[in-house]
Image (cartoon, rainbow, N blue to C red):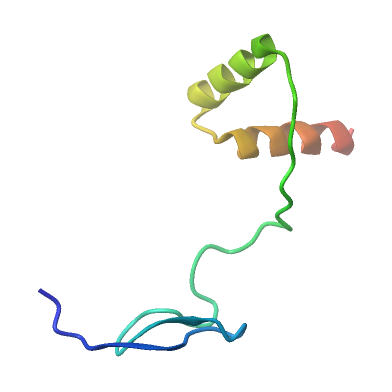
Length: 78
């Protein structure tokens, strides 16, 4: 069992309440680096295309977002 005391306090710049640990926890620059701006999008495709996309993701070890991002990047880079 971990005996580190847990406090509730302001844990980030936005001023949201969160858990503040005596060691580790949230710190400036920690975590995965952003690759861009996240925007939620709804996409309607026929089942056949969803199946092809899922198969591609499985074969290449990619998430849907990653695969779609690569498709869009390839389209706009040519």
